Length: 262
Image (cartoon, rainbow, N blue to C red; front, top):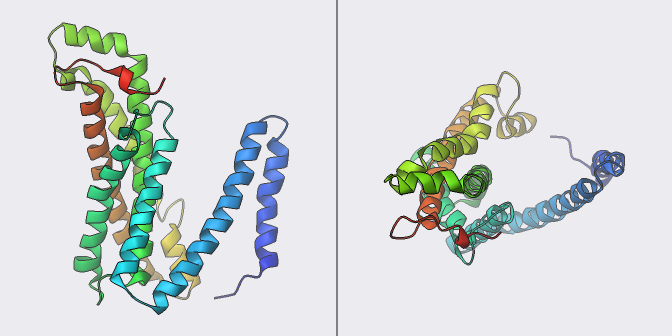
């Protein structure tokens, strides 16, 4: 595989800078966000590259677990930060973390022990990239679903309270919204699976091919990853929506929008 120089990376970064300059007059706030996101990408990926280099040289369950917990904590923060009306207190952070833990962590462990079957199962070469892909996609699905749920509950509060007044349960009053929310959370994953191999070549498959792997073997790994990501995103979204709906209502099934940031 051809090595990339710092000059090659600088040329690629120039595209982002040109885009930010082009968007500055029309979308000044977006231009700043683009540059900050690009800088974060470069710094974060460089740091994780150095960390992974050390982990690969010294395989340890303790260090792999610590990095996994750090990744989960950062993913939980990103879920919270993307909410327009997030829950007050620890719930704004906790719902995302708990949902990703019971979905992405469980599925990653299942894949490493049962599907991949490498010895040791916590080999960082497999464990960290797999968990990273699961967390990244699950994080996006949960963030979309929670944002849509809280915003819809806020905008349609009169309708929800009217249904409650007519004797419907909290679950019945939110049934239509929950369906839309779950669909919104899974749309990116469904689109990715539908377009894989026809419109786009997924990232892991492309990386393996560039590294010299046989295309057929790269395809097998990509199919496995896509199915694992779908399971993680789907179960994580289900868990997050379930926890969020319970938080939106009290024990007497009254809508509690005061639990959301205004």
